[in-house]
Image (cartoon, rainbow, N blue to C red):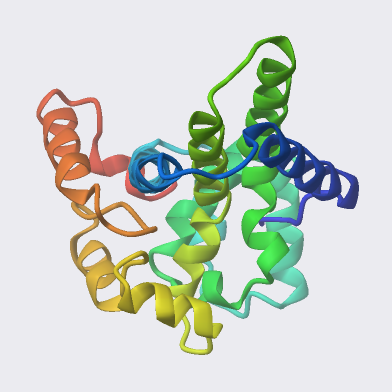
Length: 235
């Protein structure tokens, strides 16, 4: 189960991002193309991550398949005891891998999760380390403001990837999400439905701009047998 990042990690991440914006200095026209390029890269990373997590096999023989295919209430004491017993045998990263697979038969569950829960794992595993690394680079040497701005957009886009994914599975979204969809800066639920229909295409969840490239990578990886459909469900 996904969890919110500790409060101190979230606060440190916000401070680190603010410091990076301070290092970026006064905005100029170069921030605009840098921002669009970074927004594309964030979408590409969302697609590649989604593809890998969907197809990476879970640890077998420990009961993850019983948790995945449990037919009773997922709020029952029996299910919670089973889940917790299995969770104790795997790492937080493997729980995240399982969560991607669990999303396919139960897509609405992601949309019901709180904002900080949706972005918690990303902050811990990727966004906070990346932002602090950028802080250190900026302290060590002069970095062009447009490049720092682009990196901040990339980090923010990556951090919000699961939140954006969740908005594709619910109707009650903030006005800014609807506005960004109309502007083409976020993908629509109809576009994302193509992924759930096959699980073999359109893995990106931010804008969908990179799906053509991600699809080509997916087909290459499956032809090389690097990805196999047996990884789609715990076994």
